[in-house]
Length: 118
Image (tube, rainbow, N blue to C red; front, side):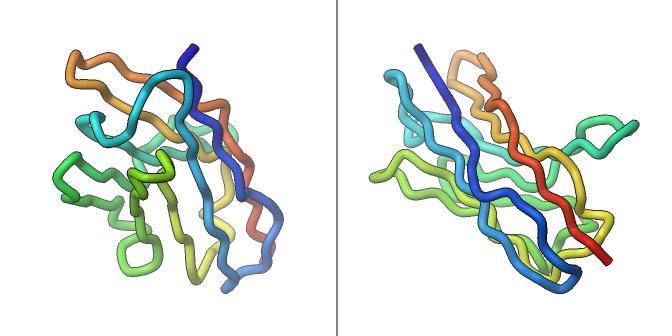
């Protein structure tokens, strides 16, 4: 059974840092993914793209996180990371990892909560 498991969330003060991890298992390999992304959802808001990385290493970011967040992938560990620096209260939300296969199927993780206090 394919699983994406996020970890690394928590409570941090504004200006602090967190690193989120998304580990894939169950017979799926991130090296074969077309894209892997991090999304977030704040209470009462729609889920939004935070950062995405393609199978050739191309990245794109939401304007609100450019220069502060970095997405990376370690194919050997079958894991994608999101390094978040200079966190702001508006970064608060549930962060979800997703993976798109070449067949355009999308898997989602269960999410990890990030709370940034002012």
